[in-house]
Each structure stands twice: as structure tokens, then as C-alpha cells.
Amino acid sequence: MIIGIDDTDSIEGMCTTYLCAVLVAELKIYGEVSTPRLVRLNPCVPFKTRGNGAVSFEINVALERVEEVKEVVKARVSELSEVQAEGTNPGVVFIHDNFLRTVRIGGESETAENECIEILENFYETAVRGILRVEQACEIISKLQFDYFVLKKKRGLIGALAAASFLVIQRGKPDYYDSTFELVAYRLRERWGTSRFIEESSVWKADEDTYPLTWDTVDIENNRLVLAPHSPCPVLFGIRGDSVDAIYKAYRVIRAEPVEREMLFITNQGTDSHLITATCEETEAEAEAELQDYLSYVLTGVVASDPRTIDGGHVVFALTLAGKTGGHIECIAYEPTKGFRNIIRKLCSGDKVTVYGSFKNRTINLEKIELRELNVDIKIEKNPVCEGCGKRMKSAGRSQGYRCKRCKTHCSEKEVQIVAREVETGLYEVPAVARRHIAKPLIRVWMEGGITNIHLSR
Ligand SMILES: [Zn+2]
Image 1: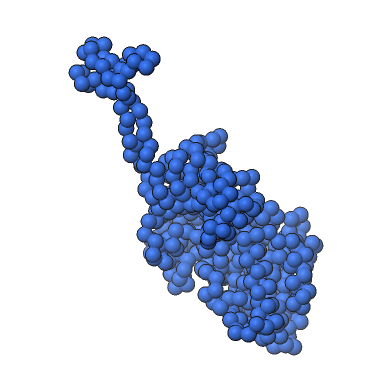
Image 2 (image 1 turned 45 degrees about the horizontal axis):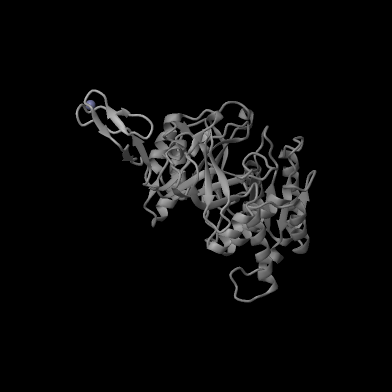
């Protein structure tokens, strides 16, 4: 049986991943439990708790004990959810073995079973890239005869079904979606809400020993640890990476307050799964015509205005999209993206760029940018230099050229200088302190190889 859970936490506390860790430990007496999945959903949906993460796991349980397992899950969700918080609407989805047996993922036949997988794939991908209504989750749950459990409104069913779907697909095709790992360490209950003790130097050492197989543990440029949350939740810290061995190696190096438990998750973090990419001209034009608020895109265009810094230290520029529709949008690098703004400030009108980020109010919130072609025809005009004394000449009057009074020299034309660009082409990213859970750090792009023009934020 696969169990998906979502929306048990609030701003004030709890964490759906902690509830998952407690359940995985508790349910082991009923049968083998898989590595749980931690699925980050569309980071921009208007209704969400902190990280917009949902969880799922599979338990190999005998048919006669299935009901017992469900009762344990319902009891824990009821006990540990922040149900008093207004926006918290816990949801659980149960997918039984009879369903999992019938769907053969990657099978040849055009059967009803494959159709079921397609439904779940679509649902997961829309949960990550789009906006879903609760009714859409309910419709699938009823059509595929899944069981479910909710407290309060049914909103949590969206994430619960998305996380369960991710696991259904991954257990059949492990490489179908890009994935990474996170090992999360949880605090002793009596410490929840108090300030965390993590020995800073040990974290820097852990990063040094295991980067780039672990990433987003620290932010060197900004001299900050990024592995620990700042909310009163049960999480002490999380170590993210591509290698389970490297993650555990880093974990053993870090010295911190005592830990109640830890849990390894397979996740869609650091994968850019939220981005909608236009792959051909046709779809690019279509995509642009219908850019939707709260969705995230990869868009190519030409810088239409020199960047300017606005109140709050944010940097903005206009972009003319390259597709057939042509429209103008704004791009913004917010103040918390720190040094990334210095790259954006160096852009000039005419530069060809590809921007990555979420869209709202005709504005892309930049997560990454690729400078594809720099405009090299940027000229500045200056008064000519006098050959006699080497100083800049003064205007001799309207349309009368330039002169040096002392040397009596004259020149009719201004001097034109080509501006040297202080920025290189290639891919740039916001620093780790400003990165969304789901956004792919460039170090992962670098590790994949193939793209050389990468400017890592470290
Ligand atoms: Zn002179």
C-alpha cells in the first residue's frame, strides 16, 4: 500500500516530513517500509504552508492488517497535525496493492492500466507546475477507487495524491523523474521552538568534505549556513545531495544538539521540475501568449531596457520575448538574491538572455539567467582630446564642433568609445540562501557535464 500525506503543518510548527518519519518508524512492525518521498509542489501557489512539501511511502503489509495500518496513520495525522491553524487542512491518500498490481509501468499495451498511470503522471506534473483544484484530486481518487482521509477541508488531498503519484511512477521507472536525496535530522520535542544549536565550523567542514555530492548546505559568498530552517518546526537541519554515502558522511561530521530521529527522503528538490520550458517555436509562442500568474517558466528574449535598481534594492529590467507574439515582460532580481543582482546590473539593452523563474503580474522573479549573446555595440561618445595639450576639448557652440581655446585646435566629431562588457556569457544562479527547494543548483548541471559555461554561486 502507498500512503501520501500533505498539509499537516503551519507557520507556527510541525512539519509533514516529521510526521512521516514518526509513521515510518511506527509502521515497521506491520511490514517493510520504503524510503519515503518528499515532493515539493508548485512553489508559487497562493495556498500553501512553508515549503509546500508533501510526503509518501510504501508499506508491504498483509491484506488483513491494512485497516490496522490505516488506523495508525489516521491517529498520528490527527494527533500531530496543526489542525488549529486556519490554513492547515490535512489530507491522506491510500493506494491499495490491488491497484499497484494491475498497473504495469512502462508496459507495451494500450490498456486501461496505462491510462491510470497517465492520469497520475498528469496529476503529479500539474501539482508541481500548475494550479489544481481540490475537486480534481477528488475526481481521480474516486475514479481510481483510492481511499482517503481528511481533517477539515479537503485541500491536503492535492499534495497527498501528488506525492503518492510520484511514488507510483518512481517505483516502476526510477529514472523517469530527476530526483535527489535529503537526510533530515529532527529535534528532541522539548527543544521545539527554542533556538537551534549547530556547531558552525563542523558544518563548513562537512560541506568541504562532501561538496559537490552534497549541496546547499552552506552559502560561501554570503557566509551563511543554509541547512537549518528558522521556523519553530521539529527540523534541526537537512543535508541535500546526489549521493546517499556523501550525505551520511557529512551528517557524521556535523556536531549539534541531540537528535530525536533522522529520516532519508528521495525528493524532487533541486531538479527544476517546476519550470515550464518551451521546446519549439510553436509552443514558445503559445506559452507566451498564455503566460499565467503563479506558474514558472524558462523564457528567451532580448533585454529591452538597461537594468535599474528600485526601492528595496531590487533590480529590474524589461525583456522582449523572442517568440512570435513578441510581448514585453519585466524581470526582477529581489534584494535577498544578493550578489546575483550585480550580474543583472551589468546587462545592457540588446543582450539576448534566457530567464528562469516564477511569473506574476507580468514579471518574472529570477531564479537563474543565461546570458546568451552580449550586445557588443554599446558606444559612449565623449568630447575629442586636444592633440596639443591632451585635455578634452570644449564645445565650440551649437553644430560647430569642438575646440581647445589655449592651443587653438579644432575637431568637428565627438570621439566614440566601444564599451568593454564586464560580464561573461553563460548561466548564472541566485545564491543558496535565496534558492527555492525545488530549484536546480547549477552545480548539479555542472556535474551532469555537457555545459561548460556555468558560473556557480558558491
Ligand atoms: Zn589644447
